[in-house]
Image 1 (tube, helix red, strand yellow):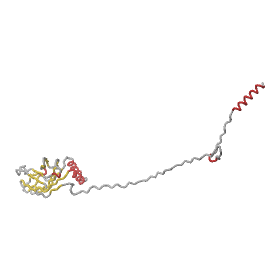
Image 2 (image 1 turned 60 degrees about the vertical axis):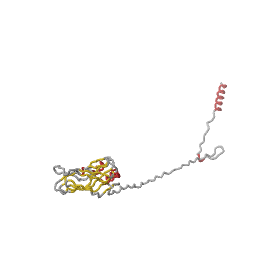
Image 3 (image 1 turned 90 degrees about the vertical axis):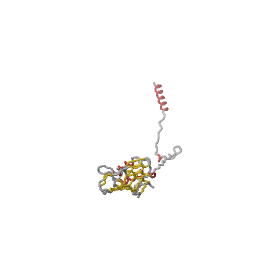
Length: 235
């Protein structure tokens, strides 16, 4: 019995001797830890932070200058005017006097005419129609029509025809002035008859032929055997 007790005691002592004690960890504040050979003082890491300042600058844009529209000249650009021709023909007591011929390129004229039209819808529509017709030149014949008789006579210079090169065109009644119709006794009208030319550029206009039917009375009787026929040479 005693021998068994001794054996149990010896085993207990053996187990106690084999068990290692848990190490004790001491935590020192980093700033208070003293320097020693085995535990040097910890280095305090310093982090450098670069702060970049963002500067917001408000830029006020300079006012954009509104370009001024080109000055409206009295005449369209590149227009050629042949004035003072003074060519007249009389048929049945009615005289047509060709005073001037005006030759204008369509392209610069259209921009000029639209600027002058302003808010006039009818004028803008006329310019747009003429510019979109495919014509490259406008020829205007400034005439004076006088009925020297004592009766009402019908004559229509604003329905005449123009021949230039191998092209023949009728007058554009919408673009022409009202210089045709019935003329009472002693009446005189002045204005421009316009023609749209498709195949001859303005600088190449040199020879033109302008024809108008003979006048007639109120019973539609012709008052002359032939109509008006102007052969015009431009300098």
